Length: 327
Image 1 (cartoon, rainbow, N blue to C red):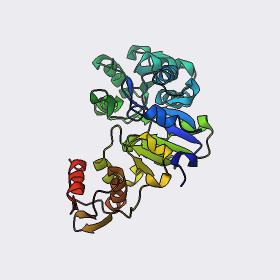
Image 2: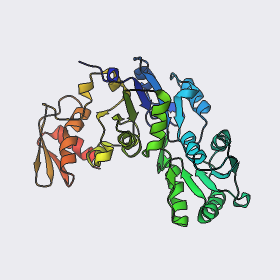
Image 3: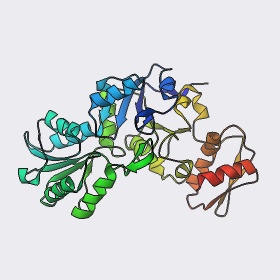
Image 4: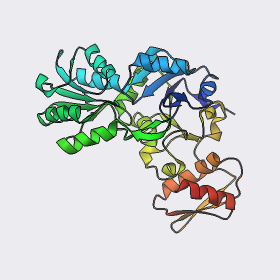
C-alpha cells in the first residue's frame, strides 16, 4: 500500500500545535518527519518572530530547517502592504520588532504612533501588545489607514494550554473601529499562496492541527490536507466541521505520514456500520483498531447530516469514546 507522504513532493507544515507547543517539541514529531525525502516548508500564522528565529528554534528542537523554508504571516502581511503603498510610506506596527523589521525590508517605514501619520496599520501577535498601542492603531484605522492583520487566530497553543492569539486583539480593534482588516494568514489564501510559490511544488500536502486555519487554508488554495489531533481541534470539532474545514486525512500524530495513506483517509471503514436514526448517528460495531479510524468512519456521515444531536452505540467502548468527543 502507498505510504501517505510519498504521494506528495512538499509538506507545508504548521508549527504551533503541530510540531511543538510553546518551547517544547510534541513527542515523536522529529522522528516522523525525518523518514522521508519530501521538502519540508514551515508555514506559520505566528508573526511574532523572524523567519531566522523560527528556523533556529526548529533546528534547536531537532527539525530539519533553513531560513528560506520558513514562511510567516508577517512576510505575507508586508507583501500585501508593499503591493498597495508607495515606497517609504509610514506603517503603524502593532506587534514585535521582528514584524517592524519585515516592514523595513519591503521599503516601508515602521512607526508606533498616530502622530507619525501612518497610512496603514499592520497587526501581528505580540505578548507586549497593550492598550496604548491598540489606541494608536484605533486612531489610524478610524482616520482611514489600510489595516492588515497577520492572522485571526483567537487562541495560541502553549505548554499551559490555549492562550490569547492575535485574533483576540484584532477583535478589540474591530469592535472599536467597525472596520475589517485585510488578512494575510491562514485560512485566507495569501500566506498559502506564498508558501506554494516559495516551495515550487507540484503536489503539496498541508499538515496542521486547526480546522479553522490550516485545513480551511488548504481548501482556500484547493490542496489536500492532514489534520493531526495534537493541538487545537478535537474529534467533536471534526464532526461539526463545515465543508471548507474538512480534511482529506485525519490522524492522531505525524507518524501517520509514514503509514499507508488509506489508514488516514477519511471515509467508511468495514469495522463499523454508521447509520442515521432521527437526530442520532448510530454506530454498530465494537472498538476495533483505534479511535482515529472510528472518527474517520463517522465523520462523513456527520458531515452529510449536520443537524445530528447525539452519537449512539451498542458497544460500551464506542459509547465512552462518543461521550468524550462531544463534551
